[in-house]
Length: 165
Image 1 (cartoon, rainbow, N blue to C red):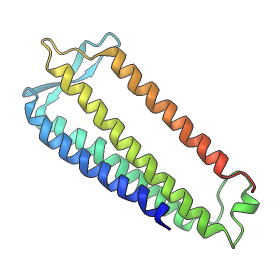
Image 2 (image 1 turned 60 degrees about the vertical axis):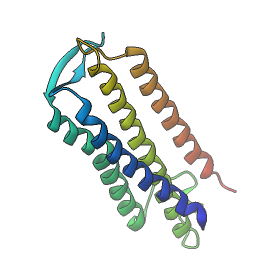
Image 3 (image 1 turned 90 degrees about the horizontal axis):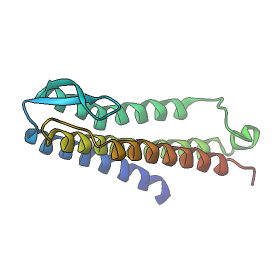
Image 4 (image 1 turned 90 degrees about the vertical axis):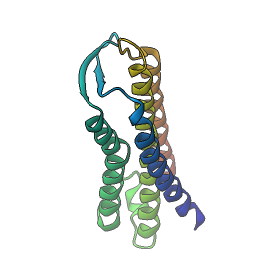
């Protein structure tokens, strides 16, 4: 069952990396951090550096952790789930394997989400290094689009996995 360990190793690794990355790069930011930008990349909201650090730790570590914990709890105990070919995949002899698969996929998604939020933090670091602070619009758009496409692929992978063999 090593395929069940790999997502969890990556998830914990992503959370550890995120905690390290945010906590070790935030001190390089100015005392007042540009934290929100308009469509043109101009800063339009600011927060104190330590508030920003706590916020980013919550987004990079806390949010993925809570999401994965919640979904793990739901999938561990749910008796009825909406999955393609549910009569096959939720049969008593396969439901444990189906649950384990869904929980492992949640760990993969949590790792992706954590790393995506680290990239958002990286964009913030670069934006705040400029005077005046300015967000690189192309990189931000590429990040959002990339994460969207990865998420679509992740969902497609779930759909393919739940085909009837």
